[in-house]
Amino acid sequence: MTPTPPLIERRIRWAGLLIVCGLVIQMITLIFVHPLAFMAFLLISCPLVAMGILLFLYSIVSHNHTEIESAKLDENAKGSETRI
Amino acid sequence: MEVSSNTSAVILIFFTAIVAVLGLLIAVRPELTRVRGGKMLAFVGLCVLPVLAVWAGGNEHLERSTSTKFCLSCHVMADYGKSLYLDDKSYIPAAHFQNNLVPRDHACFTCHTDYTMFGDVDAKWRGLHHVYVQYLGKIPKPEDIKLYTPFNNRECLHCHSGMRSYEESSSHHKTPQQLTQMANNQLSCMSSDCHDIVHEVGDWGDATFWTPKQETK
Image 1 (spheres, rainbow over the protein chains, first blue to last red):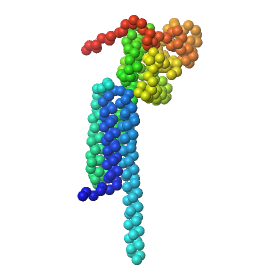
Image 2 (image 1 turned 90 degrees about the vertical axis):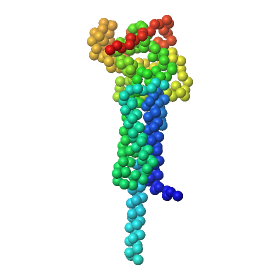
Image 3 (image 1 turned 30 degrees about the vertical axis):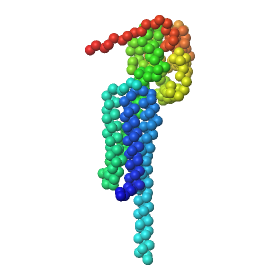
Image 4 (image 1 turned 90 degrees about the horizontal axis):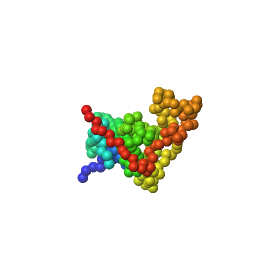
């Protein structure tokens, strides 16, 4: 049984997949000179890449928060142990 | 559909492919981000490079959307494209197109964009409306297509203003104020019985068409 990867890695995986999908669609649209290619780029490719980037940035930010919080919790736990 | 064959598009597709491969690597092996180098790689591969790729892709698409073949890719515009080859110099678009007075690759855009601060944005917005009508709306007959607003002299004067042939032409000095009136758009170039033969789709009769000679080197 493989252990579940940490939350940040799962988010990074999803971010990567969204960006890859967006970029693949962008590559396809760049092959054709047609209004539909432009629309596909604007309405599918751009939002996918944007969502991927935002998810990646969110995963970094939220990870730092949880790390700091857990470090504080650890510190508090150690402090209470020494008092006892 | 017309396939793009310009060098910049090929380079951009290649660059996008590299960024996609890097993104896929990080997506498949997210544990790479546990070390410092992996974190930097993820930031570049999932943030910096995708932004660059999309920005470059957007630029390329915007540039393409100003091309003549892009405008003529909708069936309803075919006759307007054909009007550029009419063998009659009284047709303003044909005279401009055939004599290289407008760049042939960007013939439609050159005359139909607004030469104002947000003119290109307005032109793109109108283009989006055209795409909507083409695929989701009721497509009008080619001869029923009209401009949203009367053609502004500003678009003509973007090139003609300051030209000797324009400023010294006797037909532009019928009255002392004529040049000023034209500059202020009070006297239209196109609807004052002067240059009023434009595309005239559906009204060609037995017109003949110009065939450009192949360029020889």
